[in-house]
Each structure stands twice: as structure tokens, then as C-alpha cells.
Length: 144
Image 1 (cartoon, helix red, strand yellow):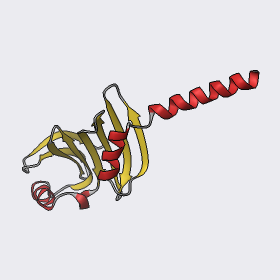
Image 2 (tube, helix red, strand yellow; image 1 turned 90 degrees about the vertical axis):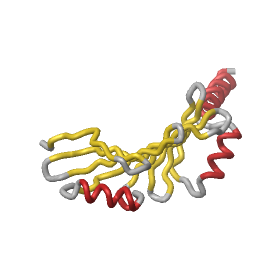
Image 3 (spheres, rainbow, N blue to C red; image 1 turned 60 degrees about the horizontal axis):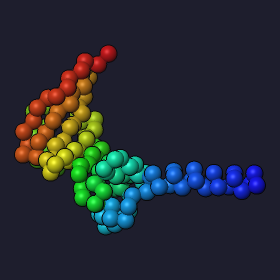
Image 4 (tube, rainbow, N blue to C red; image 1 turned 180 degrees about the vertical axis):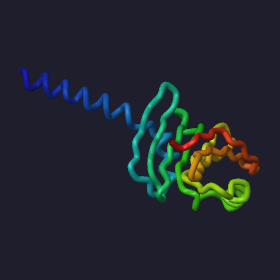
């Protein structure tokens, strides 16, 4: 009897963990149709959304879907080589004394924004670049 209770409890615990991290069929279908070869895939469930974190083509990504499988927002993290050419050129012209350290690409409600972390010998700077190429410095820190 103790073995049976232990097995039932273990199965219940495993089932609750599994269901918390597996999206519904609609969301899974959209994800698998959108990304050909993702790795390190991890799912998280919120009250009204599913979030998936994964790596594809050396780009770390976070994508959020609603429960119906509709895209809500995304974040992608990558290096300068994956920035659009016009953004890279504008950054090099305006910040010629700095080099790109990393990029965070954010899409929220259909609006694409790049947050480009740049560094010089003395400072860290984060530049927000809109899809149209307009730029604003949103952070600036002096290196210690």
C-alpha cells in the first residue's frame, strides 16, 4: 500500500511539472512552424500566455504567445554582425569612438526596437534605435 501511494504521489508531482512547462497544441504548432531548429527550448506558462526561451542560429530568443497561439512579443540577443546594415552604419558614424558589445532586439505590439550596448575605454552606453533609424542614448555609465 505504501508503494502504491508513493507511486501515485510521484506521478502526480511529475504530471504537475510536465503540464506547467508544455504549451497547448495551438501554441506548439505555431512555434514549430516558425522555428526550424531551436535548441535549449524551455517553456514557461503565465496566466494568459506561454513564453518560450531558446537558441537558434546562435541567437538567444524569448518569444511570448497568447493561449490561442498569437504572437505577443519577443526579445532576441545577438552581436553586431546580425544588426541591419543601415543601423550598424548609423551607429558607427554617430559613435565612432565606441564599439558594439551586444544587441537586444525587442518587438512589442508590432514595434521593433534595438537596444545596442556600446563601450569605449571609459564608458558603457546603451543606444535605443527605432526601426526608422532614430537614435537616443538611454543609459550611460562610467567604467570603474
